[in-house]
Image (cartoon, rainbow, N blue to C red; front, side):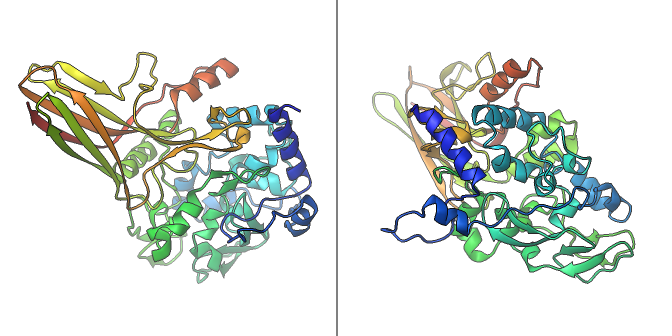
Length: 446
């Protein structure tokens, strides 16, 4: 059997039988055999299904929680499903795996559809209006626990009781209840950790990365950074509801991350700018140099992760990319060396130093398609509170003064991904725009 076909069949079997790989955050015996399919199926939590309409439409929240609803309505959570960039990849995965990925990717992007039996079909044709709103108010605020810390392992309890991190408010519309899980990073980790069901490859490892680094060990949670309106940990004073008590800090439901490209494309200019500010607060670039007698410039570039509680980049790192752009110019302004520049077709110089993750497919080829993954093929990212170093050896053509410009650049999509999307759909999408995360300049004399 062809290897690619084997993995598709395996994935279908694992998902349809309810099997799951061993939990990525649990310690596994070094010599222990993995569970059989029957054992895994017996241990897997039963899928929850509720009647369509069991979850409230976010419109019902707007009247009392206007500010929170307004922030959410332009967030990536609100567009988790109604997002043409996601949809294109999701439907391609559906086609290549005969629908096996519908309930791998879909439940995090359309959790209410998944929990009310409206997904599949993969095209969303059965969705009601609430399901189309992506990750919305009533899904998150009726979560009663987390059963597994990957692949949308939340436990839902839709109904009149709305759960959150305080529980001391009052409402005429619903009951209010404190929920400890809403105060923990595990609430986020149940979706921001994705494991390939057929082979255990970590497709998205944000939660596990955080859990094992300094931020996780110090208890600095996802919410501390991503539910405040600016980079880092800050306070957001205000009211949760129209008639609610004024508080020193209200959770910001804009959920800012690195998605400036999509936010710009959706016309959300304020959110796009906030995303760029997050990116620009995450890293710094430091330079050191020596020049040999033969005119060889040895340039050491240190990229330090000073502001992200996870690796840079994170999330769908197989689509995203960060890279170093290095340029050396002589005193007349002529470029004598360039790496990481943008080509005329808006692709990045393929010989650049890239920070990203790619998979190996069944044929041993690098791929950015997560459902084809059989192993990690390339993983070079900048760890939280850590650094990555690249050394360039650049021949200088003549004696004189030179200027070195080095920048850490970022794209939330590769142009190649967008090119493929346009070819499949026949619809044009905006070219991806690079964000400068950090930079440094150096004067050199030979």
